Image 1 (cartoon, rainbow, N blue to C red):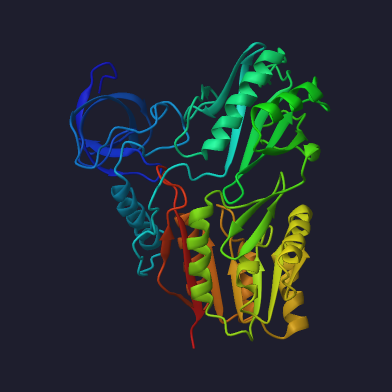
Image 2: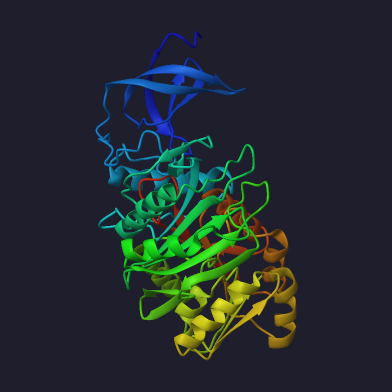
Length: 450
């Protein structure tokens, strides 16, 4: 196959990253920016052991599910993968992705409900992490081009809250006019590495975290004053110091340089405090849909002891707390535990407590102390639950586990492990937390077989 000569490919599926999948002979070819039903002219730009990578040259016949991307950065920015695909088709595909993961990875035949989508799938994100680059006086800030560390300069974004875009443009202009250098990851010099922006949908307020290589922010007072004047909704500015040669965004030290320590978000009847480093779901509208489903599956009567593992700032456990006798959250990050306790305080929830430590160490101790745990909630990162955590729940003989997952592959793996140890999974409910991307969140319950 000559790389220089385009070839016609019929796209029949999408892979887990949202790239179109077709075949040339017996070899699969992955083509970004295509959807099932497209017939496309494709240039082969890469070869792997069992598939090829293609670049879209031209759509010869468009799929009924193809649309014009609503964002001008869609073809270059790596933030969204599916802006060329109708929203309802995205939801059907995500349901299929969950079904395939459960069947192929977990060898499980579990019902998967239709995905809970958004009525208005735009401007839903409440958090953005924007790298800075370029040179003094010629700043670029946006998202990385897919598969690279090249920054696509952002001028608008259809998935971020409009106030966040307003603040991002002001940050770029003010830092650019200051003449201060952005971070150069090759030479490891410069000042500004990232601008992390958070928004409160319910209160229409903003928080900015400037991640710097340097211990201090040059021209700090001038920058703070100008940002406050340009964006009245901005109520908090923090600095995070990251002097390391690393791709990790945050360093170890964060300080408030101006304004409030928190912004606040309302989910249902609860008000949550969000600090610069807090983990909080990025889609407040769909977070309520997800948490309502967790509450429905928990089916609490007021007599239960609920264990909330990987609890972060306590959001799920607190959402359930008024229906339980006792909620105990477990989290390894001390700052998150402090935020969880503060969230319990501001909501007047007295039946929730939070423990700092690893689940594999804390759960056996709690079982010895309490004698029983009626329901466990797990909301792990993308890598899923550690085996020792699952083992601790199995050994504690917890009758019901509610699993919130952001990765269908690790969900399937962990459900299969629990199935081998006497548990059966119920219906899996996907929730579209990230429209226009290939990601999907899921929640399901797992019950101990009698």
